[in-house]
Structure formats: C-alpha cells, structure tokens
Image 1 (cartoon, rainbow, N blue to C red):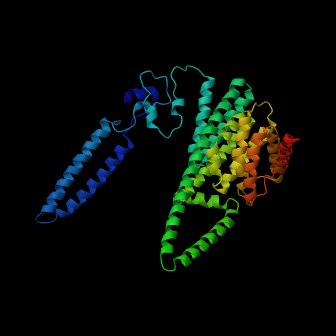
Image 2: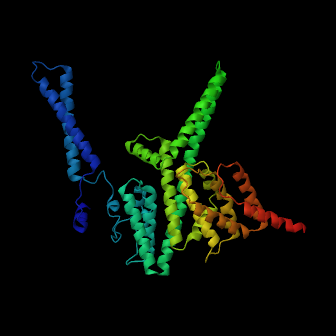
Image 3: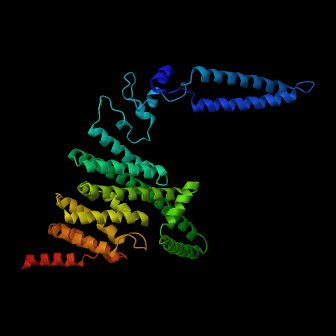
Length: 426
C-alpha cells in the first residue's frame, strides 16, 4: 500500500507522530538510565538497587529496538487509514470512503467533498462547496486570519454566481444562504441558552447565600449591605459597557491568554454568531431571498425570548436584523408573505425593540432608521386582521409602558385600531 501511494500520488509514508514521540521519549529515558548505571560502575561492589537499575536499562534499550523495528517496517500501524489521506481523490476505485466521515466529527460537511460518479463539473458541486465554506465560518474563530479568508472566498463565489446571472446559479446562492441562516440561528440559540443557564445558576447560588446570611446574627443588615454592593456593581458595569468595543477587546485578549471565564467565552461566541447572522441576512437581501429569512425569523420564538436578556452587543446585531426584516416586510416587492409570518414576526420581535439596551454604541440604529422601522411596522399592521392587530398592539403597549426606551412609538397605529373598532357600534 505504501508503494502504491508513493507511485500514484507522490506521498511518502512516514511513521505516525505518536509512534515517533514514544520512540524519542524512550530513547531519552534509556540514555538517562545508562548514565546512572555508568556512575555505579566505579564502585567496588554493586548493591541490589544497582543490579535493578542495570536490568531496567537493558529492558529500556530492548524497547527502543522494538520501536525502531516498528517504525521501519510498519510505518502506518498507528496512523490514519489511507482513505483518510486520499479524501480528495474520489477516482480511486479500490478504496471505500464510507467510514472516513467518522474520522472528522468537527468537519461540518465532509460528505459534500467526496461524491462518487461525478466525472465532470456540476452546478450541485458548486452549491456543496459554497455550503461547506459557510458552515466553516461558524467553526473558525473570528480572531483567526483564516476567518476573513473564508468569508472573502464565500463572497467571491456568490458574486461570481450572481455575475453569470443564470437562474440555477442564483438559486445556489439562495439555498446555501438559507441553510446557513438556519444553522447559525440555531447555534446562536444554543449559545444564549448556555449563557442563560449560567446566569440562573448564579442567581440560585446568590439566593441561597442570602438566606444563609439572613439566618446569622445581624443577617438582615448584612444582606442589605450585600444588596447595596450588588447594585453598585451593576451601575459600574453599565457605565463600562458604554465604552465602544472596549469590553470586546478585553475579552478577546483574555481568551487568547486562556484566562477568560466560561461565561465570557459563551458571550463572545454568541456575539460572533449574531454578527455572522447579520452578514447572512444582508447577503439574502442582495440575492433576492429575504423571504427565507423572514419565514425563519418569524418562527424563532425561543431566540426572540433569549434576546431580551442577551449581552448588549448581541442585542445590537439582533435589533439590526429585525429592523432590516421589518423594512423588507413592508416593502414586499415580488414576495408573497403570508399574514401568519407577518403576525409572528411582529409579535416575537417587538419586545426586543422596546427592551434592547439604548447605550451610546449598541444597538446602532440612527434616528432616521428608527423612523423607517416605525413606518414599516405601521404599514404591516394596517394590513393585518383586526384581531391580530389587537394582540400585537396590546403586547406592545405593555412592553412600551415599562421599558426605558421610547422606541418604537406605535401610538398612531394604536389610535387607528381603536378608531376602526369603534365603527362596529356605529
């Protein structure tokens, strides 16, 4: 097998790195033992420990010899099978690639690379390649240089498909982006769930500690003092969070040094996924497939609920996505969006508009953009049945009344719905 690989593909078989490391460590141990034995030879009489050390030395050198034989005559005995090494060569008929996918669980779409029976280029192969690149974006760290490389490659493939203008190539972009939108939103949902679970654990431990403190002498005084200190820390954290990108840079540095907490890592992951989701949404709009994002976003009720307690930077990206989709929902040019999609999208994502942090940096929506979103929401509401308008506007009023933000202000839509309801009794 090794000779065939050398002839066909120029691949020179070598011992595995694991076997080489074992051999080198054994050689070092044998050399150290030889030195210790050599020192004892100067004595007139050996002790029992000296004889034992000498026997260990001999056994160690025998082990070195056995490893050397394995490395010379069995180089692939502890290494990946040949089909793993030839994953990029599907024309070799004598190999079976069915089991090779289990060797790479972290590779998202390894089954898209190897396909038997494809003798020439095909449009489906291009779609599989694009889906693979988009899936890799979720796994590559944002701080890596390969992340920008993969994103630029995906953009180049999609731009070239659009430049040809063929319907099949445009459909490839839409299907790959729709799949990436679903995958990224699911990953974001899981990341926010893990962060929320850690917050709940901290809250439960804090409540338990408070009960213990209250049971002690002067416990009520101590618990009140603890509450004051906690409130002070919240204020300090709110001030710090307004500094642009400062928190993100610090967390990235901590993560590189390996000292970031698990919650900070999860927050960074959620922020990365939210930013990727915004990029995917923009690309869906560019290639005329925003209806896919509208449908999926309207059914993401769990993600909408978790967004209310997410990090302010994550909220910023999700507000941008929701605002973008609301504007496209009102435009609706060439799209057949059902009333159910419109109702669910407004019902689930209006609370985020009301409760999202309005700091100096996040969410980044200009005054003009906010006015556009309000007009878009009003247009969508005007086309819904009166019962759907009642549910959405009632929930909006409840959130708007207790939120610190004064956006979105749907008073005009509320008054219009009230006026329409009065016509029933006239």
